[in-house]
Image (cartoon, rainbow, N blue to C red; front, side, top):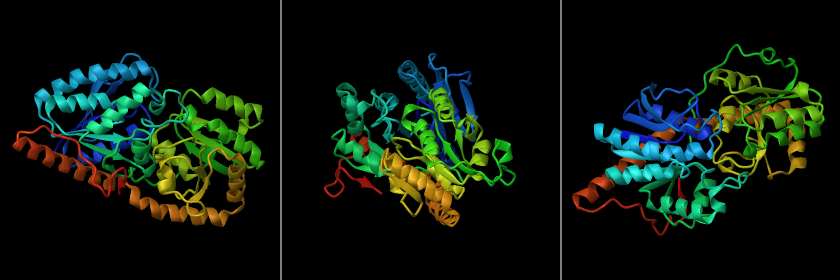
Length: 409
């Protein structure tokens, strides 16, 4: 196949949605021709090859940070991406378009698919449908909600990565159609044999929490600092991997609570450094308000860490209290602190959760995700070819009575 991915973010721009799409693109590039149409910002090259993936970046001018996009850069991506996408297809025909994020990428993938008569597979990632931390969340505004609803209905296929995301298609947008449920996958992390706590300025006998993610409102990392203070464990330290606009607020909260020496902000780091942080920790903890899926949970599980998190988001598909660690009711700070104290006191329990997580994560590596995507792409290509043979325009999949409004695992 000749596949065109459209995503406004691709590493090193952005967060988890771009990371998993990049992993998917690299895996598919082992067997197919893969091109990614994404944003150019922060001095990135306009064209590059990433492990067999041709990456085309269009200038968006207004973006100044790797970790966080802004509205002007998102809007600029659409006309720039369309112009480049039209030119790309003139040079060589694509077979299928995979559009990632209904907002902001959705209109671009839809327009290019209709312009070139190609099937459009729309992958929704959670935050593009529902983000409780943002007043701009599409489900809160009638015009945006109507636009997303139209994109969900008109796509030839829709893929959601969790039951939570699949449910939002119907419950928030009123779209009754088949939605393929394909859990995201991660690359198998390498062994990190020489990682040490001293490298991160940690005492050898510390109880180490680690969290990974952009420092934005949805992650609510200041709540994690509150939990560190509430648990009153003098040997507990937090490694925070990631950067973003909440960095100063986190530092201020840590200083205010007298925890500055036990809160370690690493900023944006290489994968090797991130894996090293995971490898020397005792627990992965996050106070994120919502996750569309949560790739970082899988990465932590691959390193044998128990997980402590809230119960809002796609991670509830695979995380269970007292099996993978603890899943606590959203913003129940008392229960969160209690779980943290319990994990600190029970080294055997941490080991048991960690071994369970190592086994469970074997189901969530990128090769499995890529095979499922291939199946969807091939099915849509067959449907498009059949409709062309009949002289009819391609049409989106309609729900069967048994699967209407439900995910198809």
